[in-house]
Length: 85
Image (tube, rainbow, N blue to C red):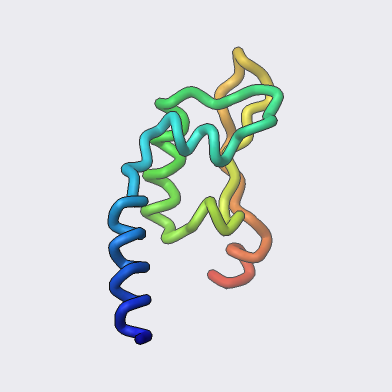
C-alpha cells in the first residue's frame, strides 16, 4: 500500500518539476519589493551564493536594491555569518 503512494508521489513530483529561470527567481525572492534587481545583478548574486555556499531561499544572503540607478548590494545574513565563524 505505501509503495503505491510513494510511486504516485514520485510521479506527481516528476510532472511538477520546473526549471528555475531568472524571472521566476526574481518573482520568488523579490515579489513586493519597491525596486527589483536586474537579471545580471541576480546572476552575480547567485554566483556569489554558490561560491560561498549560501542559500538565499533560507535567508542566508540578501540582494538589496535601494534605487533603480544604484547597483544592488549583496548582504550576508547574520546566521550565515555566525555559522561560518
